[in-house]
Image (cartoon, rainbow, N blue to C red; front, side):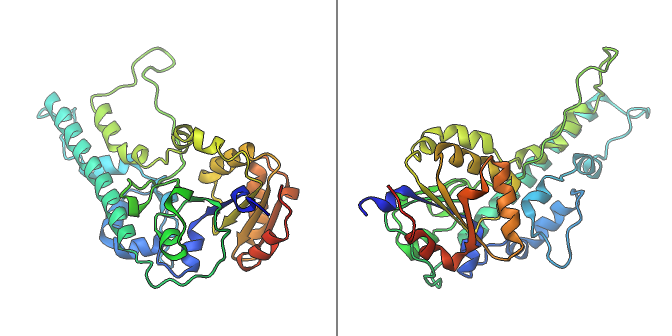
Length: 303
């Protein structure tokens, strides 16, 4: 049917790269950056599994404990000691600012280097795409372009692409309440070390994934999806932090059908529940093994 493939949107997650045997798990990142992540691990309040370390790296980032970071770098005398000088608090703040920024920059740089080190040259084709369909990729690699010959203009790399030398986006979806300036009696909550403690908390905020900002900056792109009739989700874990993207796609492509791949049988119910959080009806969704998708897609009647 003419222009059939232009009504299809593929949404690609990391499971698709892993299906092609690319070493793109966060456990692979830990192997690549063990010493740096072990340093970071000192400041996380979540236990890292020894069996599968750092498999949920982005979630771990959301447990960063600024208090631990502060205590580890604070060698200043107590303000109650006679030797204390107010300038020590300012020096501590400056030092913590530098240490926190260095840690964040090192992790971002190492993440970028790791992604750029992943080769797709030995990957073999395992899927048949509609040739002129559109793509949203959550992956950083060039697998779609290099292996499948997909034109770059058809792919929206929602978190950046290593091949374009983008700044790669990753992070957690946690938020924290900020202590108010004044208590309930109108007295200041600030202490002389308040700014230093704030500096120590910087990595937590630096690694918040800016989902709302991404949606706002790319509003025109999402609006351009209004003619999409079928959304095919390949290898995406559908974690809560990424659900706003799927909710936006669902709202723009009202009435669209969704074909969603799963790897293990227990993911079938989980995927349907996650889409339910986006306000979607289960009747819209077909959940199946990835190998079954081309046949299901070809049987669908599109306008």
